[in-house]
Image (cartoon, rainbow, N blue to C red):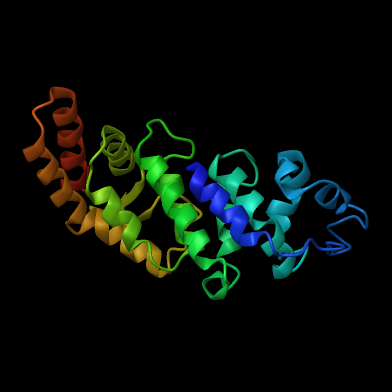
Length: 237
C-alpha cells in the first residue's frame, strides 16, 4: 500500500480511544476472547489476533465504536489480502455498515481506498485482483464511478491485463445477455453493481479499449485488447 495513505489513516484515527472491552454475542464469542484484541498496540496486532473479530465485527462482536478503533489495522491487513479469511470483501463490507462518510476520518479513508485501487491497477497479478478489489470497494462506498473512471484510462499494462481477466471471467452471461458480475459478494440490487455492469456492458469499457488501440503498436498489448474487445462485444460467447 501507499505508505502515505496508510500513515494518514493511522494518524486520522489516533484519537479514537481503545475499547476497555469488546463484548460479543455469548453464543458466538467467549467472554475473554477480546483479550487478544486489546493485549498490544493496534499496529502490532496480526491476522491471528484480528481474524475472528474481522469476520464478526458489529454483527455478533462489538459495536461500531469498537470497529472505528480497529478500522485502520483491519483495512491495512485486508488491503494486502493478509487474512485469507475473512476475505477483503467482507472486511471492506464492514466499513459499509457504518456511517463513515460522517466521521472526521472520512478524507483519510477516501485516500486509503483510492490508493488501494490505484495500487491494484499498477500490478498484475495483484492480490487481491481488480475484480475482487472493485467488489470490495463497492461494499464500502455507494459510488464506484471514480474507480471505473481510473480504470477507463488503461494507462498501465496491468490495468489492461486486469480488464482482460474481468472481461473473460468476471461477468455472468445468460441467453446472450450479461446479467450480473460473477463475484458472489456483489450486492446485485445496489447502485455500485448497476454502475459497474453498465460500465462493462454498455460502452465505456469498449470505448476505453478502442482508445488504447490507437495509443499502442505493441503486439502483446494489441492481442490483449483484441481479446477484451471480442469478449465484451459478444455477450453470448
